[in-house]
Amino acid sequence: MDRNSIIRRPFRYTNSNAALWLIAINVLVFALEYLFPRVIGLLVMTPVSVLGGAFWQPFTYMFVHDPRGFTHILVNMLGLFFFGTQVERELGTREFLLYYLLTGLLAGLFSFLVYLYFGGAYTSLLGASGAVFALLLAFATLFPQAEIYIWGLLPVRAPLMVVGYAALEIVSQVFSFQSSVAHLTHIAGFGFGWLYFLSRFGVNPARRMFPRR
Image (cartoon, rainbow, N blue to C red; front, top):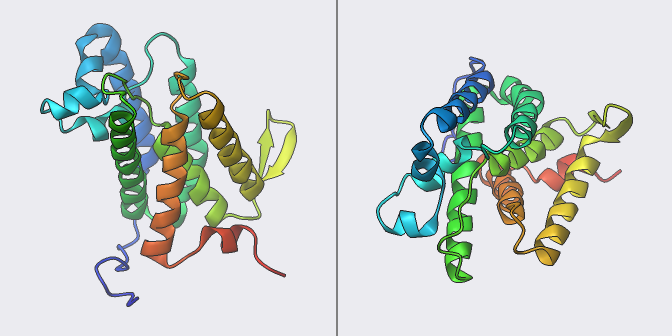
């Protein structure tokens, strides 16, 4: 595919620390959830609400987190900070934002369709996990030799971590379909991130992460 085609055309490189701004937006929305609880119902993705006209929800769900504790937002924002900042520095802010927001949106739309198909019209989806999981894939593809320290102690190469997480999400989805954790959305984040690298850059993540010797 021609590099100058609309799909492959590169953006001018800039680095405006958009990952940090995304973290700030997520934290702000989290604070608003306590001040104005109705914000949650307005922004989370619930298929019946989308069908009723809330077309923005497959996008806005990724900025809302479970208000019953800090673990949900903390884990996602740590992922966005540690992996998102590195991916943004490598790709540039425009490419990073397109990747993050598009994979999150597509993961939301995919989940919307699956929920409808399986009779989950009243199931609510919230959290940045789908887009963050896409960032994990991007990080491992761009930095295949990087090592991640699990629990700060156990070094694991980034590609192995991604494969491990993907396998865990697939197993979790199969054996706990009614779980409150959106494993399906996480898997979709991986999948759409993979398709993004194939279509936008002509890069097969598997070949970058596990090159043949």
